Length: 409
Image (cartoon, rainbow, N blue to C red; front, side, top):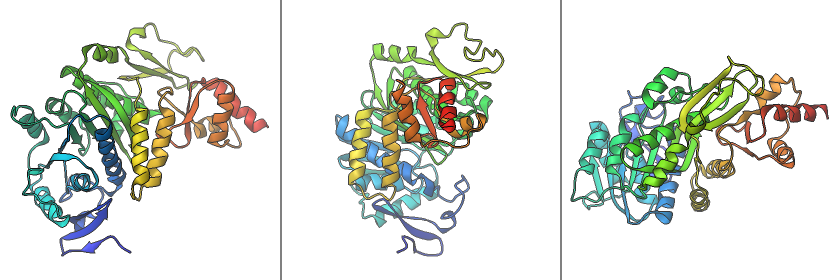
């Protein structure tokens, strides 16, 4: 049965999660862009699924009070409406978008889902996101939000500072999306330096490098605002990065995090990669494997610490298991792999690339290869960043030897 119903010549009704919304007919199958009447990206449904699960998990694990949520770039209002229907304990939600057409559509979609705007829980607004954050930050008689979602078209960098000024300083949840992946993944390195104050690398594990650059940037802006962050979940899917970070206000822990910022080095000639913290950044100018001094490059500064918290992932998985989301199985796969990634090095190896380089006739199953590596005393896991890659603390030459020997057998 189709989940689309024509309303009139301009609007069409669709279903997502446990909600119904109107979107403009011309926007339904359009390539997502700023030119849409009201921005809606169908491919972001898994983002909204995980966000709903993550906010409920945050409430169950960390929130000290009922939820005050700011959806700063609401578009059609789908994320906010889903949260109102799918999450409990929401005290207030600001549904904001600067587009006047969005504001009108949000009102229609609230009515469609029988959500009463007359109560004090729901506040629809039309503001620039930074202006909204600043209004909230400097209202002394209002409770500060403990959840802020930033989901822009492109970079979120313009909005992070004012969001940290608005959010609860301890145990707040910041949910940030970046869709400027060409920048973060090193296709546009100068733009990355300008926007994120870090040098990227365009290589086989650039998706993780880009995610760690985004976390570093968010963390540094938090530091400026006398806060630190703890990443609870960081994931890549469908050309976007989404991170969920918890705020804290502890000067000693902030300094500890700053000391753990660092760099990832990569040798283009032999594929060797390693990470160093800022304090250890001395005289690294040659690859220790192939001794090349012209092929060794670096990315950073970036976040080297953990990018997921196990307790948080476990909670989301439990809630996902009870959900009826159509992406349920896909979410489970992503999060289970994220669990395995937690204590692994901040890089991964693309097996197809290595096997092509070594002229291997076949590639072993990833589970088989992980078992072989673990039997040799090294760590190994899959990675959600790339389903044909693995993470391991084994060096490149040893991994190449395993793949060569596997083919000989």
